[in-house]
Image (tube, rainbow, N blue to C red; front, side):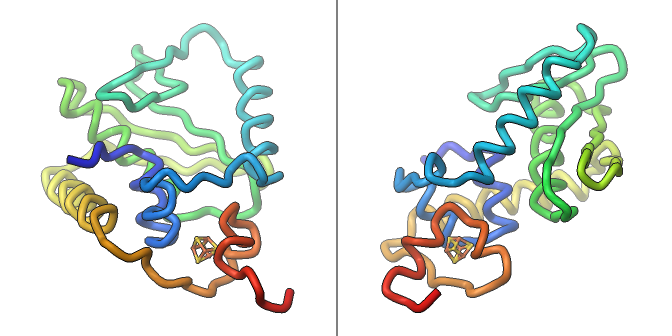
Length: 171
Ligand code: SF4
């Protein structure tokens, strides 16, 4: 059975084609400047992080910044957009923590470019059911014989799969 990760959950909320390509080992991230910049921001932020944060690994999912004292997940995102995928990723971390006995964890998403933070509250029972539905949907999409179609939206221009999806088309 497909191992569901926070990345696949984020892609479920971004583009199902991207989810399928990534899960089926078709990787182009290394060609994306945006991903490289994102990693850089993460590294820089890490340098500034106080010792209170620890890295947690649960079922192969790595949560880079977890404050065990306040049971808070911190996630930093570059760019000038607050995306549903960011929130979904952090909610999936909270779901995993809950499965491992930390039911009241919450999250904070930091957007340094926007000078903004977004709070992600602890999950309710209804949230857990919703996230279980995400897992089922991720597994369904990954198992599809055919790659889902191109979605032709604004985010495509900054997606690492752009060249693959739009090969042969005029820029
Ligand atoms: S370029 Fe667009 S359609 Fe292709 S994987 Fe990325 S987001 Fe999806």
